[in-house]
Length: 142
Image 1: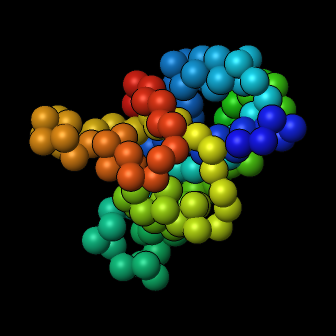
Image 2 (image 1 turned 45 degrees about the vertical axis):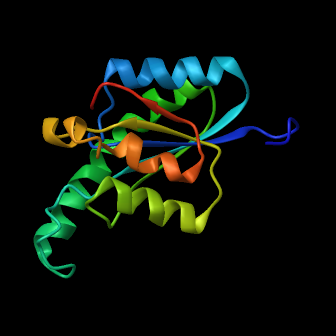
């Protein structure tokens, strides 16, 4: 990453209202060196619900409203403007890949709930992202 531009940090959280731990992680990252943050919340509607089903849109709209109210807190932690959105994707990995297809990233911060079995089988999201070669920071979910 060139030293003359801020790091591009993707924050993925399954709760549009950030936890104190997530805000602290964003603040700590912003304090280390210049960074620009994008927050993505995976669509809270189950993936089994058809893309055009109203439940997907209703749950995404509700999450978007919560995220909009939370953005000032996130921006305060980041020390700058933050772009935030709710993904059309339900699976966090899909949401990350969707974001990567649209823009380059230098780092990822994860605050998502992982099923214990995924962690035990080494199939947790942080390990699955290892092939990208991008540093991943894991924060307590939500």
